[in-house]
Length: 129
Image (tube, rainbow, N blue to C red; front, side, top):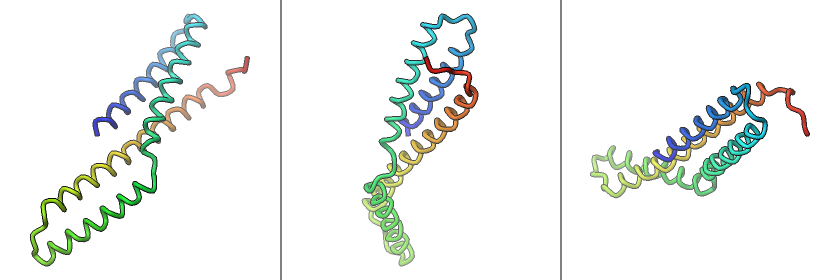
């Protein structure tokens, strides 16, 4: 969870810095280019970190395991049989791992939307050197 928040803050900070770099009307072109390059490097680092949480066969296996563990717990509770603590801990661990991965996907979606807006703002004003 903490990693997701840190990544979210890094994305927001990079986007804000991008806006402030663009907002300075009298910025030296060399400085602007360097800041843009630095932002791209940082954004790529964030994307790389977030992509590690992309859906994988292992995550799908964990999702199936969580479903089986949850079903087992429900069956035991329905029969008024005490649920072993280890089974509850396993359920919590699986939920936490899957929740973290889903939050990373949300941040990637946020980043994609923000970058699309930035690209739309840039439009065709940029020219290739």
